[in-house]
Image (cartoon, rainbow, N blue to C red):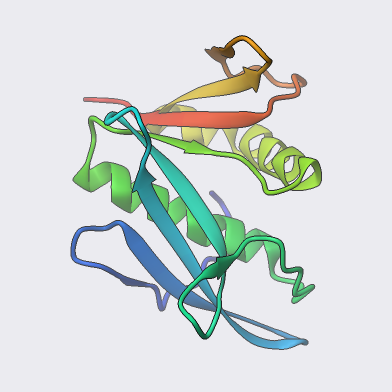
Length: 152
């Protein structure tokens, strides 16, 4: 993504967890990105939020630290790192709210050309009977997203 990102990212040796600090007018907030295996061993869920004192993640907090694009670029960098280590795994992500999922869709749309160079991108819609996965299309609403590193 063509945005500044936080450079001081610490990652676990297995590239399943990354931490960085959001800095802005409302202070400093520890952020964490976690990749956890789903019931499908080929798909990992991307979890993101504020790291709480007890080690849990709160994905509903709004810090309003005016660094949204920098945070999104940093999260994207962790996806690049994760899929570099695990190129055969796909990453699923969705916002904790419809508004955040829409934000992710807009970020993908604005950076689609760059992302398409490295990833296969899919939109996911979930209904009562099934999940429908399709190639990501601009202007479509999705319940979540799936990305997989293109193998070169």
